[in-house]
Image (tube, rainbow over all chains, first blue to last red; front, side, top):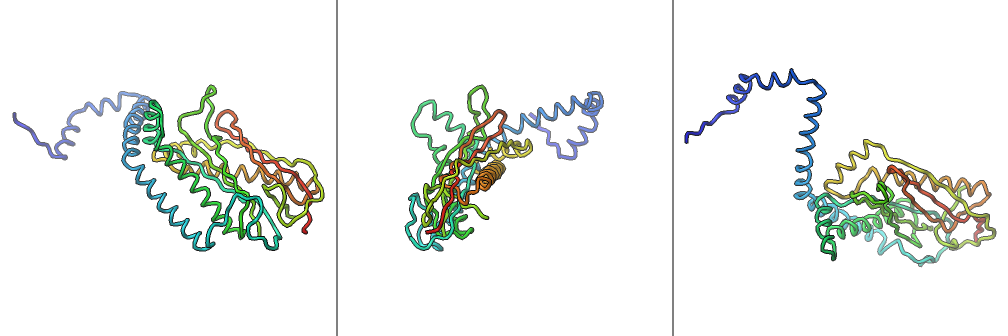
Amino acid sequence: MAQQNYSLTELLLLLNKSDYMYDFLTSTPIWLLILYGLFFVFVAFFPLAFIYSMLFSWLHQSGRMKKLLAREQKVAGIVGGDNIHTLSNPINLGEISKCGLVMTNITVSPSWWQLFLGNIKSIFGGQIQSYDKVLAYGRAEVMQRLREQALGEGWSEVINVRVETSMVMNKVKGGQQNKIGTLEFLAYGTGIR
Amino acid sequence: MEIMTSNTETIPGFRITKSLGVATGSTVRAKHIGKDILAGLKNIVGGELKAYTELLMEARTEALGRMMMDAAQRGANAVVNVRFATSSVAGGAAELFAYGTAVIAEQE
């Protein structure tokens, strides 16, 4: 069977010769064209985004974890230990002149691929590792931000630290949470100096 | 006068001489639709959604500010045992509520 190999320019010439595209574009009303365009964008966008999520979300995640670890070590080097704790009395009792609330937050969500894995895993039950990673990252990050903020604002110690979880950004649809899975972590404590 | 805030029941190094009741502050915030769409795109790879983080932090700071104004009107110089509460109102709007006990504290 004879196979014809067209170069790109030849293909473009062929397209120009056929008036089909031209007729299609001129005869269809503009709003219908826009509708077709949107339809194609959506049809192409979701599978491509899903594949991107499948291939690259682990890369983004490991990068974030590495950065976080470096920051934790840096703060530990400056403070010489940890400057936040959950006790209600300060450990290094000196002259205390001032106190104030220190708070930080982070909103995290699993990637599409992780949501997909989690949904499959929730059929069988058991530990869902893909969500585990996201939550562990969120908690570690919010604690680290609290340490950094305490350093930046000049508090020598942060006492009575609490970490709260809320799902405030989720829309409530008929009593059910939506499926994006956005979580907010809030860490707060009393800074003293 | 600056108001001290604390989430402990007593402030270390201070003595509470008078309680002036519960000081409260709240705010309701909704997100920008453009930011919502961008956050939806960010959601593909997961991780932090900065738009929501900032929005919630701004709202919480405002609620805390209102609580401190309430305490100042009561004549307090400190608010102890501060708590936060959140609730989700319809359509992605969030209510953030901060409350604590307004007190007069003296340095020991």
